[in-house]
Amino acid sequence: MIPNLLHPVPISIQSLDRTNTIYDDDMREPVQQETNVATVIVPGQVKWGKDQAFVPSSIGAQEDSDGYVLFRFVDLAAAGVTLKREDRFIALGTYITDVYVVSLQPCGHYPDQGGPTLIKAFFSDRQPSRQSRGV
Image (cartoon, rainbow, N blue to C red; front, side, top):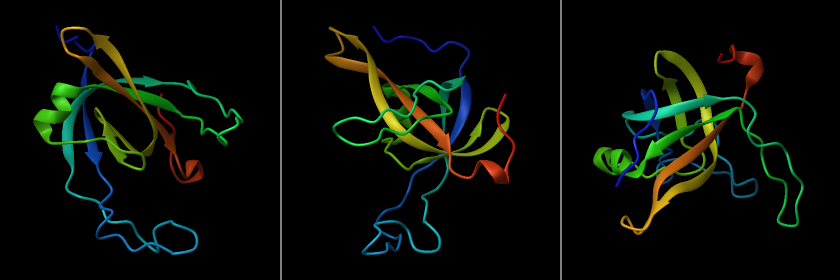
C-alpha cells in the first residue's frame, strides 16, 4: 500500500550540482554562485508554518523551517530525484519561491513496503528580506 497525498500541487525542484559548483576550501560553501541541475517537477503536499524551531542540542544547532513539502518516494523515483539538503524549491504550485531544503524526515512506514513511503522536506528561506513570504 502506498499512501496518497492530500491536495498535491506541482513542486519545481532544482538539485544542487556539487560536482560543477566551486567551493571555498575554508568555509565549505559555494563561491559566487552555486550550480543547479535542470528543474524537475514532482507532485507534493505543501504545509506552511514554523514546524521546527531552533533547538540547541549535543549534536549542534538544528535549523528551523518555514514549512515542509511531503513527497511520495515513488513520485521522486519516477522523476529521478533524490532529495538532499541544500536542494531548492523554486515553485510550490503556482506560488514562485526561492527556498532551500534544510532537513529531511522519512515517514509513512508500511510493512509491505519495507520502510518509509513518504519524505518530509523541511524548507527555509535564506534571504527573507529580498522576497515576500508564502501564505
